[in-house]
Image (cartoon, rainbow, N blue to C red; front, side, top):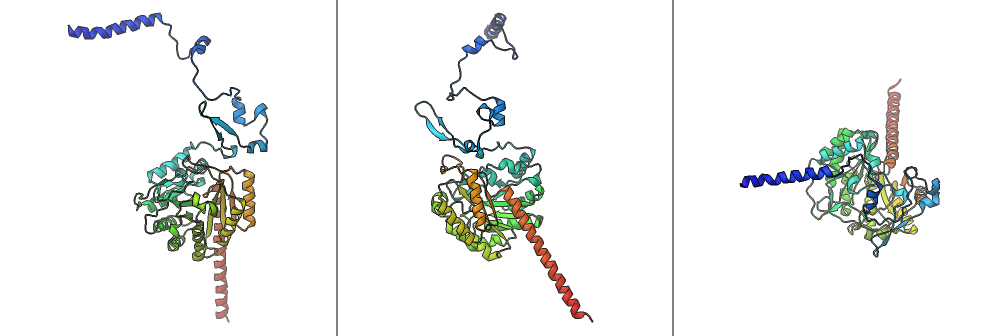
Amino acid sequence: MASLQRTAAPLRRALTYRTSAATTTTRGLATIPSSDAAKDKPKRKTYFKDTTVASLDDFIGGAGKGGEALAQSAAYELRTAQVGPAGKKRTITRLPEWLKTPIPAGNDNFKKIKADLRGLNLHTVCEEARCPNISECWGGSDKSAATATIMLMGDTCTRGCRFCSVKTNRAPPPLDPHEPEHTAEALARWGLGYVVLTSVDRDDLADGGARHFAETIRKIKHKKPSLLVEALTGDFRGDLDMVAVVARSGLDVYAHNVETVEALTPYVRDRRATFRQSLSVLAHVKDVCGPHAIITKTSIMLGLGEQEHELVAALTELRKARVDVVTFGQYMRPTKRHLKVEKYITPDEFDMWRQRALDMGFLYVASGPLVRSSYKAGEAFIENVLRNRAGDKATMAAQTSLDHAVAMDGRTGP
């Protein structure tokens, strides 16, 4: 009897479903619903009140209202918007048009580089610092046209700068002893002509990671001597002996970023980093290697509230330290926990600072809203300078050898 009751319930449900299906009008997925049904459906709540939306063609073409292109003054004008629920609205500044970049979905080459990095357990500052140029640098037509800045010694920093989104911890994981070999293997596989190495600050290590950095550079040069290497290092807590360890490792460009002007340094960078300490690092590289044996480079973020006279003073001090290359870029706030953007610098202002820096005697200046310290176009210029210098050295060596041979021939002649 109990078994019959258990089977009766499913039968009743099946009969009920069949009866209701016979009396209900069904609609296929391709059927267009009636207008009455659409009117009865409640609209989803939204805060967007403007119903005059441009057509898709106008949106793709970037034209303004009426189809005309935006004037330069209108394109540079900052726009605000009201966001939030009623009664709690707040005004935000929209990101300027010149700072908008494609979503880094990437092509096949982008995915291949990312797979190589993950397979060898390597990190890049492109990802950790949320660089806006990642799709441009990683998404070249082939790997030889791509640029990636490898971040050594893990992805966790012992310092907490207020502009940086890299993870922080007082006791990061220990160094990977295989990282120098893995890094050299990855770079040899890509076939690049120029590579940038950087690292987190490791104040927990006695040498700040300088020997690990130097070992990586030596491994790279051993696998591919023609590869030009730029090292973007920390300040090693002002230990100039450790700076010399990296500078003598065989690299071609030594980079260390001052990040901002001297007056803002205590508020922008970790308190263990100072403007004068960074200047001493850059100056010591020239003292160790000579004025022309190595290129020194630094980077400054704009939009943090720096004043014109402060920026001029910073550039003057950098030239006194014999820095060759400087880059200017717009500071972009990674998260709400980081420093606010005080000002969005226009492309015209970046052009002005580029020319002023060149007039002060810098070898090369990259300046633009999306320029970062490891900037692709800048690397191409520096690569050309380095190869020209190498060619000049080879020519001078050959000429010296020829002069010596002629002199010896004159001595042993009749």
